[in-house]
Image (cartoon, rainbow, N blue to C red; front, side):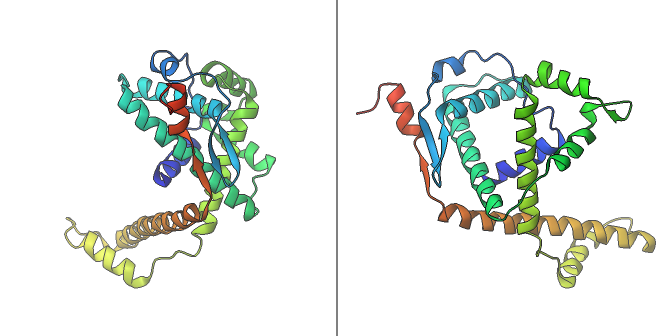
Length: 243
């Protein structure tokens, strides 16, 4: 679950305009769900309403249809629903922890980040009208909703950086990894390129260690959290299977 959250966070931060493409939802979406305000999950008392979950699931399913040009059967939809809810639960957990650590993203930081996104630029500069047009015509969302999503993603990114700030690569770890990667490389790196090669190896190894560290940290956070998942119960009620 955490890997999916991190992956989606990075994708959102890099392709911020492309992953929330919305369109008319048909087929399985209308079959599986109805408009309801039931609580599908609680995370340390924080409620996830079924209506919000439904909208997120339908959006994700529609994105998959468009990206991979596939028909989503009932089994795939059920798996996707579980994944989406787990991601929503995980996101709330991370934002709650970020709040405890007093991690904040200011309006200026948010504005600076959005204005640097190439999708909203014209002739190398941020274009407000282009920004509004993309949100309205392509993302079919409002600036308030979009900016809230971006701010939360930036908060989670800062949380990851803070949690993993003490992770380092030792000289021995670097030497061992460099030996493993470079011993059979042909042609052998020139002396002037060797430092660059080692620096790239160091950064790659550092990211691996940070990822593993954060994964273990998150598992502890999840274990200590009070999480209620009512998805199966609610869907049984909706389909008349409840006792």
